[in-house]
Amino acid sequence: MTRSELIAEINKKQSFLCIGLDTDLSKIPAHLQDHPDAVFEFNKQIIDATHDLCVAYKPNIAFYEMLGSKGWDILGRTLDYIPDSNFTIADAKRGDIGNTSRYYAETFFKAMDFDAVTIAPYMGQDSVEPFLGFSGKWAIVLALTSNTGANDFQMNAYNDGAPLYKDVLRISSRWGSEENMMYVVGATRPEMFKEVRELVPNHFLLVPGVGAQGGSLGEIAKVGMNGDCGLLVNSSRRILYAGDTEDFATVARSEAQKLQEEMKLILS
Amino acid sequence: MTRSELIAEINKKQSFLCIGLDTDLSKIPAHLQDHPDAVFEFNKQIIDATHDLCVAYKPNIAFYEMLGSKGWDILGRTLDYIPDSNFTIADAKRGDIGNTSRYYAETFFKAMDFDAVTIAPYMGQDSVEPFLGFSGKWAIVLALTSNTGANDFQMNAYNDGAPLYKDVLRISSRWGSEENMMYVVGATRPEMFKEVRELVPNHFLLVPGVGAQGGSLGEIAKVGMNGDCGLLVNSSRRILYAGDTEDFATVARSEAQKLQEEMKLILS
Image 1 (cartoon, rainbow over the protein chains, first blue to last red):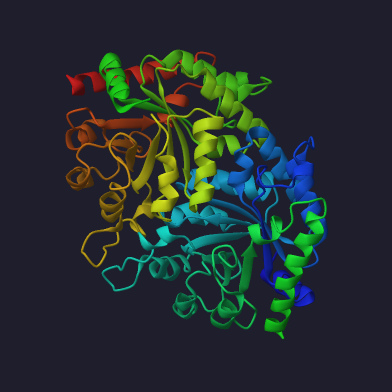
Image 2: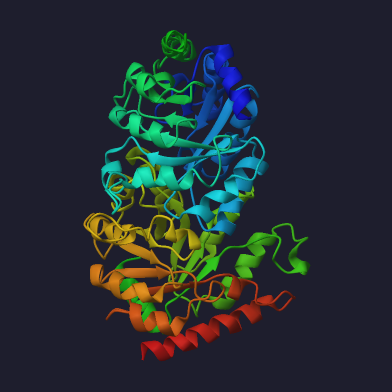
């Protein structure tokens, strides 16, 4: 999906919501536990109930890998089930030397048909570039993450006085453009968005950490939005596990709707 | 496998060779291309031919993921086929927020039974710690990688004057011990090993980049070894694709043997 197509979807749905499909067999409703295809069935019902309210879905690959080859198959079928009008993000946080990153890119962009993959920047340019050569596909590079461990390296200052995450933004933004790169910036650090926007005014930001991790949607929108919206705000647990009975999908929809209505107000 | 068991294997085999199972369907010999289980058959013959000459095997997960659920199944069967006396490394370069990293750890250490996983440190302590709570299991953290992209961030200096990779060594080495952590240090930068050893004198180092990427085994051993050997030197393409006919495994063995004999001299 291209940048202009993504912006059109945001405007049409009046939403910049991304739903994280972090589907955990131990957390899905009891009545689905014995279903022969429980994880896919859960995803299917969540997608049916929410696809008109969100612009993106983001399966967290760890939750599928832990199920082995069966999980990989569920991931593929989930991706196929998501409507083409939803942007899809493989939350994989990959990153390796060039020839290996090329295989990861082919896995997520060609063998599967994700629109985007999250990438860890530690290994530098040749680990990110293989993700940038596919039309309508995106590398979403970790800049400032929402976890406490972000303090260990990302927030440490370089000899030019800038913390690592700012060097990641400054240096890596030269490797691609706002048409094929986004950045992960956690909602738990709203005070940092101003500095992020000074370095990457036009890029989309994928923002985890609203809700369960404590970030506020209104506050993030105020400091993080740009003229094209420029935000995909992710919510996972708050929506997926809002209900734990047979009407879980209806309850999930109503949680997604609350966020979409808040986003509609913000966008107008 | 514990540290003392690993050291015992190194002494017994007079080898610190790790063979990277970066098995690429497009590079395996022509006579295997039509085999119904070509990648596993290739791995099996490589393992049969080399397991007494190397102490470790390191499948690069990208090469299996690109084959989808079938690749994940081949990875599992390859791991099961490797003798228990060989140390096994999932070269996955994972790293995510704590609860997700825990799932990656359970995938590689429990669902499968790898001895170690390679980890990208960008997300800090809570992304690494979930890999440290398994007896006899290891997190192998990227410090200084062998690719050109290592110059982008890893070599940049912090405000304390140390480049990022040294801060990764200094800070992350407090999270675990030499019994459950190793570091990736590329053979392409032998001049850096002295500084690495000042920070982590006792840790094992996993060293890629000997051979195809240009690093020299003798030079690395001189600057990187410690009293317990402290090195696992990886070779992938040089061994796997040494031959391309029906005797490829014999040719691979002879390449592995050259390295093992050089290592034997170094160890004595």
